[in-house]
Length: 122
Image (tube, rainbow, N blue to C red; front, side):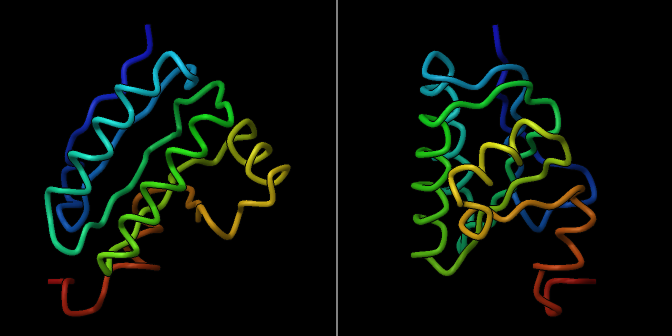
């Protein structure tokens, strides 16, 4: 069983975090989609981080859902990015030539530095 819970990351309240772990494929897709929709609807503009540091496998069906969620966020002046620093996710995104469409960061702190507008920083 793969758990894909939605949660807030302490210290990073400026965005919502969806944590994914294990194998992400067609079987886990409904749970991931539900969590992404919830995170996208929690704030305006939607700012969502998909934490994939514990993902061991990712298939193309999940990439399609991530792209759709990012498009939704962008259409509402928000963003969706990935946190991952390991090979499986990066390799698939490179092979599909999607590195620029699904931005990746090694840690949530790197996102704070790169994306959070100055007026949001205390």
